Length: 297
Length: 176
Image (cartoon, rainbow over all chains, first blue to last red):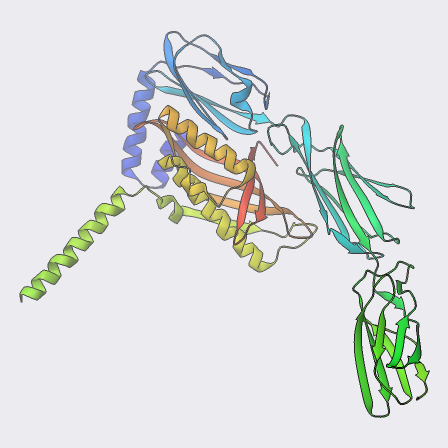
């Protein structure tokens, strides 16, 4: 009440001041009802709010996902709130009205974690990239409340051919996150986030990085020159994905012919139409291959 | 002269009608007294770009204006497209509860001080702490049953939608 008067005075709002004073008059003439809300409450657990006084009243409950009204509650008795009425975590306001209204506010805390929201990025990542993989986990209770008490999330990474790696992170404000390098070998990386028996799994596909060395070989045939690469691999020895483009360039004096060929089952092949002696080279991304000299027909 | 008189009449009618309509429309005056500021200096692991900061402030402000409108008019329609997931579900349930019990809530003089505490590396989720102050009036029919100046703290999760940031979690807490 003092706040309301102060606010009305501060805002120099005569109408509001009159309303507040009238309200105070009305309040004092009514029956004072004391409400006793629990100091702690947990989402999904029934509670009781104590009342004082006698006779009947109207009870209201306003919460994050609830607005309810109960007529004819008996003062002096506890008001029971069911598990379904306090499922959402947050601030609740209980109001009891007779001639005047009394209120009590209380907070409902989240229940224990029952699900983990797990965000893992990216879905495909080249091998041997620093801080390329990120993982974010957020624990929620069964009522979709974000669990804010600090707890430890265990991130586990498992890839074929290497020992599983565990990374424990404390949640801060309901969020646990970490970043890590991608592995050396291409293949599936299984990522699991878990806490208190709750877990979520994601898969990140680790793919070969850019080609590391290009070696080409070729031979003349009736149509010109047939050239092909040796199996194209990244620096860790992983075969590059099919479709990676290799550019073959054939130079014959001032004449230059260029052919783009996709890698198919580790090898890129091209047919170059030329009759004279040529120097053939290959490139993919920023990598240049060896030069190949092939004489004329 | 007749034409000028007619024009005067039309103008006067339009102005009068505008005043009437303004009075009849659900009050969204709270919108004009709704301040939102964002401090992103403590955001990790990623900094919040200035354009993103502006979008978040704009969309958070719009969301709260719409929340106030929905709870005052007892219509879930203003919530559409601004709240998703739990936040949408909870607010829709609250509006539904108000409709059933004949209650309504009026939010005014809103002031939200946001602090970005987590912004995912990929930019797909941001956690904000909102220290909010507002006046709330709860009505049963036309009778005011409660008025209060509230200082409330919210943990907010927002994610980028098609053309705006949407609120997925709006959870009040006793302290950060």
